[in-house]
Length: 244
Image 1: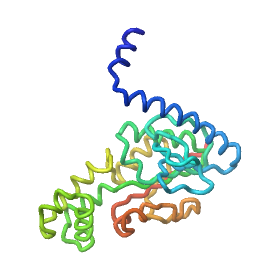
Image 2 (image 1 turned 90 degrees about the vertical axis):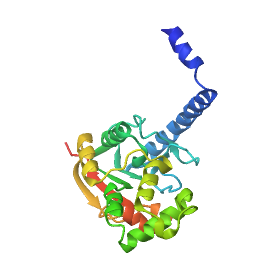
Image 3 (image 1 turned 90 degrees about the horizontal axis):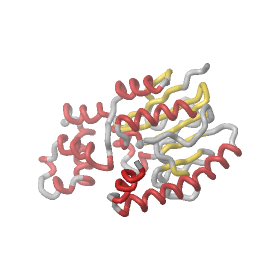
Image 4 (image 1 turned 30 degrees about the horizontal axis):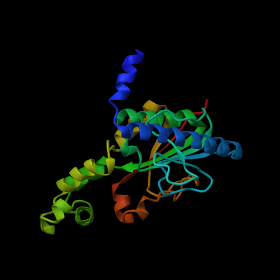
């Protein structure tokens, strides 16, 4: 058994070992951040996949760990955080980077670490938007989106086709392949996955707006892409962990 394990390691490329030890180091540093945050905060708020959107008063986490105050967290694996600990969990444009198994793990882990009555808000691209883009390409806002997306992200098309030849199918194909996207959901599928994870009081929300002050105007993806296109393509869902 030991020999087989050693044989598997022998055939691993060098980058595997570099990443392995890097992740171990990041986890060790992050455990300090986790303990410090939990010890200093009574109301606890977790952001999963913060990128550059580091929120004051939140435990900000990310897979890339870009800043010293950001803790390493892999949303596709069990969270190194205790049960029933957080009042709020928020994640923006991360869920689409997970496969089905990882996505269900993320929501189940969010449910586990939330206190009873705790809230989750999740923003992710909307499959229904892509369907509408295909079915109603003549709409002015869809035409604008197709032109913008093609010129910015699909140079193989923009360098070889005229703008009146840009098609929604090009944009939709790129949307699934680019940026590391794995799964694009709509409200129906997200609601089902939320229920499987244990959540109740599941509802669709407007982008950037919430009746919960901790979530109101918290999204920042509209600062990365034009705000009107962010509102067009983004689905926001909130849910509650049932009280005992």
